[in-house]
Length: 89
Image (cartoon, rainbow, N blue to C red; front, side):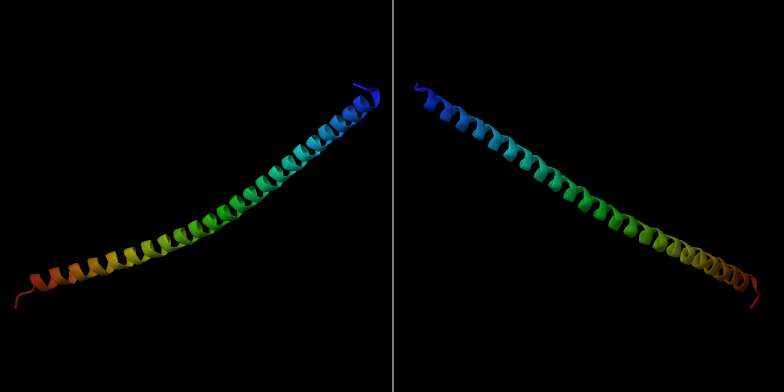
């Protein structure tokens, strides 16, 4: 192979290798950006879940308080029924 053709071929190969490295680097950067976006999305969803969990816990406390109130009212009603049943008519 003539020397000038070999030199051109070597230069072409060098450029191809550099281009491949640049493409690989850009793909790695894009993958990193994609992962960062996914992590950000997951963190946002986690915050939403935490907020909903806090809301559920608040509602559970509210329901528990209402259940205790109803239990007290039921005990009062049972007591009144017992009093009425024990009275002589």
